[in-house]
Image (cartoon, rainbow, N blue to C red):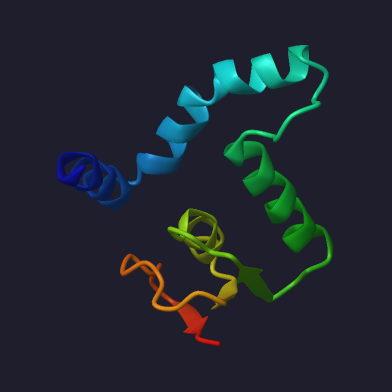
Amino acid sequence: MKMKQNIKQLLKMSGLWYPSLYFRSVAPVLRWLKSGCGSVAPQVLKWRVIHSYLERYLLKHFVETGTYVGDTLDYIAKTGIKCTSIELAYPVSPQRPRGATITPP
């Protein structure tokens, strides 16, 4: 598990993490579409939907509940939008995205 985290961190620092996720998600997205979109959408599609809402409505602040590891918060924070995570279960992941505020219960 530590090796996976190190690889993820290196890819994030190089700017290749999110492009690699998009590339790796092509097959799951196609399977999801082929199945009629009846199950949970792949993560990258959720990120794109959230990002499109933030752009369409010119939102300056993103609030997330149930952050878990912080991948969505990290993805949105990289766009420059202020992010806040409201957690009902505390403590949260130590990998809090840079620039994100975490509000305990």
